[in-house]
Length: 595
Image 1 (cartoon, rainbow, N blue to C red):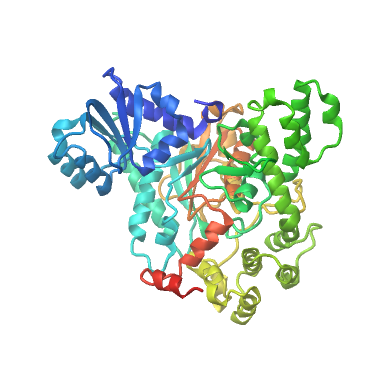
Image 2: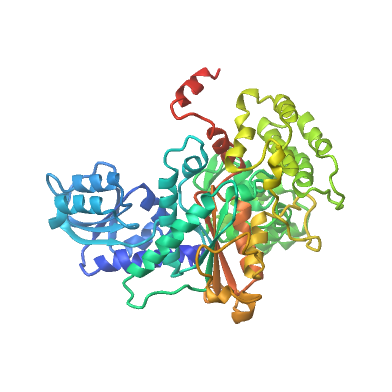
């Protein structure tokens, strides 16, 4: 594996796949075919490369759902989700005539009895191995996982949802496989909410499924609670973080640039296009991704000096050089082109982001930060949020940016009047698309103020006045407060009750730091301490992902893992919110009515 994936969740998942799926097939010393469904394709892509599979005697990787040529002399490893669609595709491979010599079947998680019986009835004589390996999540980064289920947002929050309970069940199963991969049996906590109880429901499901999992575990010694907590957070807890313009490198890139499947497309000076993958194989990306854009641009002169020094060109590096001229400098060093490819990518990406910032985002940031924090950069309380919002509405920003600013204004007031809301909607010219704003109420976020507003109270915030921040980046995601409170054992049990028993390590005052000996900062050292797993129902932002790394780094004795149904960007969340209001059968007619 490459160095970027040498630790954390990716390494754990790949090791588990090798220990189960590959070890079971290694006894037969012949080349094999690996057959994957859509999810397991993404799963394997996230934690290994083709060369890793080749070294394990897997010569071909095929798609379960595509037509394939029979190879009757080869054995096939099937790695798939236990769904009716996958089972039917598997059966078709062996009826009426077998495509392969034998089948080694591995499910991501528990296979329902009816599907197992169907497979057994039709293909028993071809199946040499059939196992469940308990990995039904994607390890996106060293400390980040995803259920890879963006559709869950609509299933959970839509008032017309018909599969909410089924979706929560599936998410719970996925969280249990994460805990099993980490070898943790955590205490489960959730936020008490008098209005929406999705977090509580999910906590109940996870806790019950964890108990069943460890009772059924092959280990003869029944596993007790480990030094871990699982905190289930609803997206409504912090509606601000997904809407703000975040200025750290990763979050800013995914907000402002079209990046699909982690692929950044950029132009060279000759007009040709190149693509680069932004993942943990890129060590420079790992180094830069959580830095503020001001720090990233500050790194650029150092990179130039480093490159120039290698060619004995220190003098040129010391001279003032524009960001735009850096790519030209690279081209003068053909021998280093490949070695410095990653740096070229980030010079281009940093330049792209700074162009966006200077053109548009800079003007938005002050107003957004003042509305989010409730005070200006000097610490003076914002007395009239409308005065802060107006310059944004009067400037020719694009409609999405204006919607984001209006939402921050409404969040700052805990809801506004119907009259005021109508004026705002008219000003932004979204009379026919008011769902971008109104549909937040389906998440339990107040948009219209009502006499019963006392039932919704804002999360109390940590005092961070002593922390150094940039004026355009004063907001801290609420989730960081929660992480720090848990690690310091300060999270109120009355607001965040345990679904079942509390692990003993978290019982006392300052439990983590007092009961755990100090650990080193390397990932392997961290893993021997306690763990906090945070699951955000309804999507997690890149800024919240960053918080998991920051809290882990600051508290060496506790590793924070964060995950969600899917990863959010501001624009993708706004579309999800808008779609909550669509009737299932009316989506086609709505499209036809648009000019």
